[in-house]
Length: 259
Image (cartoon, rainbow, N blue to C red; front, side):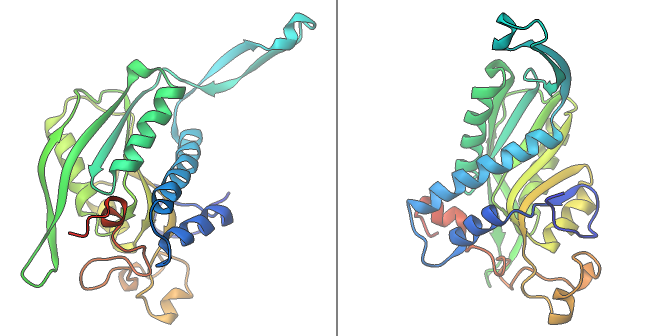
């Protein structure tokens, strides 16, 4: 419920929410500037986090006496509730991921046990050739706070374009960081068919949540079909690997640094 139907696979969730879609459309408008850009990012990620935690995080049976137990012995709540002792790691993919990851870190610190919450930092950028075509992703440095064993590892990165950055980051964690996480989850605002194809091939254990799927450079015939039906013919990236219709470069817009 509340998701766009598609044929990409069970690990990929594209939310269908008119309110969030409207806010995201406002964010993408060429008329929208700072500080509204950052404000909208925060609102959208707060909503996305609530959805992902409710659907993906561990629960356990709890018994809680409500305030009415003073008057009624029956005022006892028994239900499966969130396990707030769950370990959480949010990964900042600088630059576009700085604001979403910091917001996620603060969100979990307020609600979960702070001693089990941490933020890692990955300094990553696109690598382009002489014609400005993207040819890969390069990690120039990182600060990772230790093991990820039994943790929920989140990647709040707004644009899921080529899949290069998330795959390079997952390769780093899987090869160099000890521990087996409970889940790997990407939280994106917009994804493309190309992004989903890449992560499905290279890291099929990654779960993806997004607010919108952009495949605007597909043919009119393809756009009328259920997403994923003709995956090889869907196109959401231009020759410079930017998303269409997209939002422009959010890393640049969030930082007012257009380089």
